[in-house]
Length: 57
Ligand SMILES: [Zn+2]
Image 1: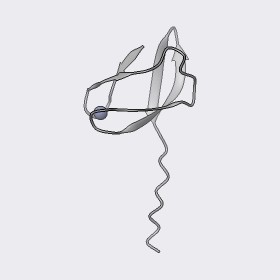
Image 2 (image 1 turned 120 degrees about the vertical axis):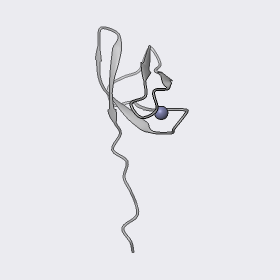
Image 3 (image 1 turned 60 degrees about the vertical axis):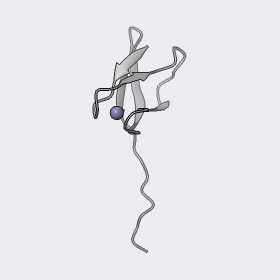
């Protein structure tokens, strides 16, 4: 299944056996998404929660 990157509109390929919670990344801009839901063979993506380890320490 394919979907589009919300950031740059590039096509993102999602494995057919992807599961909810799987992380996919856009090969064009590198933004990471998490599979939020799979409905009727279409994956709904949400931006992945990236843990910034920049605490200014
Ligand atoms: Zn992108």
